[in-house]
Amino acid sequence: MDLKKKLINKHTLSLASNAVMPVVGMVTVSLLARNLSGPDFGNWILFLITFTLATLFRSGFLQTSLVKFYAGASKERALAVAGSTWYLGFAITAILAFISFLICIFYHGHPEIDIISKWFGIIFFATLPSSIALWILQAEERFDSVFLLQLTFQTVFFISTVVLILFHQTYFQIIIYAYFFSAVITSLISIFAGWAKIKAIPARTRESIKELINFGKYSVGTSISSYLLRSSDTLIIKFMFVNPTVVAIYYLPQRLNEIIEIPLRSFISTALPAMSAAIHRDDKRHATYIMKKYAGILTILLIPVSIAAIIGADLAISLIGGKNYVNSDAANIFRIFMSFAILLPVDRFFGISLDILNKPQINMTKVILMLIVNVVGDFAGIYITHSLYGVALSSIFTFLVGIIYGYWMLKKYLNFTMMDIFKLGVIETKLIIMNTITRIREKKTQQKVDGK
Picture (cartoon, rainbow, N blue to C red):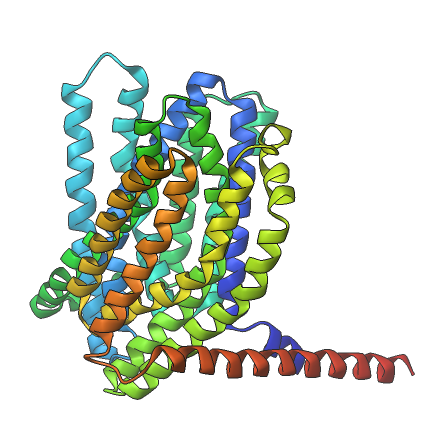
């Protein structure tokens, strides 16, 4: 039982959530791709892109703000922040829903656009309670409930999709209904379980609302800029190269590189509330320790992962893309990506540290600076190399600029060095390995005792 508690903790639950959810989502998308008609699947992707962008705007404005001001706060303060988040969340949702309503009224002629505009606002409202619940649960470090809530939505939608396939009802509008049903079920669970804290709405205060807005206007800028940073390579490649297959060649290693995002998101989810609580206690030393520890561990762990990925790049590309991409540039581009993968944890943790220190404007400036460097680097790389390698190599300079700027700004508020991060990473990684070996030995010893 003690071993079980050690293995099932906030870190493993957060990792499971970030690892399992994309897999379930991809399986569902795969089923839809195989059972929807071409036009219907295209319309479904259009809806997902539109809905994801709107969700990105809402979460970018409110998620980090809520976690920062909620984690480690007093009960009264936490309720005020939760209630104020509800107030602003409803306002943002209502504004975007009203825009979709206007599109529905004034834009005619395309049935699929009519369906999306009609259902966008309804589904966006339906997901509001579960979204706020997920943010609150993250702030409270209740990652078991986060996992259950995310699994609920994915499972309900997956089962709904399978049922529709069995009854041969796989049409775009019917899938929209299933998505809405899944959102409603998930939100109702979050409300009745008390996770969404809907009763906190009367506790909202003008001061908390103003605080969330002042922080959110920068954090949403960071979110949108980060999205553009991830998308800029593909857009520039599509613009600069005539052959459309070139986009696919670059897209495959990009998707493989996103595997690294799974542990990154997991570590950030657990570090964010802990760092926020430390700042609430005015304990910058502990907040710095958490930042160094998590960034250091991820950096050290990514070194063998990167080496293995560089060696097995051809196999990885063939598995995800098939034989058509085996002899393309995709494998070498993946090798370039993995050669600078160890920069990602430090860059990401510098960003959230600036947010936690209530300097979201500096983090936004950092991401915008990276976006500018990436765009200029992409065009320069293509001009110099006349190939996709120039685009991939320019990303190294993008992340180096982000790290240098982030380090320069953070040093004004926190006492640390880059070497501190790597030293602590080595120490903590050794502890993890030693503890894991000890637990395995304990388990084997217990099994022998039980066997006797």
